[in-house]
Image (cartoon, rainbow, N blue to C red; front, side, top):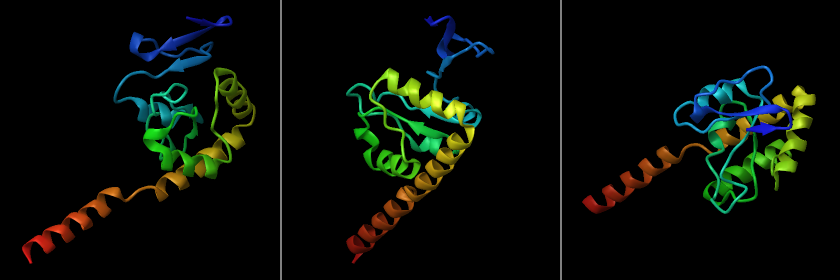
Length: 145
């Protein structure tokens, strides 16, 4: 695959990024944490089409700024919090991704600040397991009574 004259590589094809790699598509399971740690920002897929989007908390919790399309229904509260904290991140097309990615590549300080903002927003989204355990314990206590 080519994007202009620079290659677009897919991880599922076994490719590793090179110095001339413009886009690296991370489409495998279990490896995103490492890639998010290396990246300043990530476009979280499944969101330019009516798929509902993927989990934005994973990159955000690793200080990686989050970009995504308008179809984020599966994680709507998390995306809303992250985009509000970052001040941007919602894109509607490949051209929008390219513009925002270009801006962040030209200004790594902005990308770092967005990643830190995403982290803060993501940490405020946590606690579901603890809240669920409290609710289950309350239900069990009521059932015993």
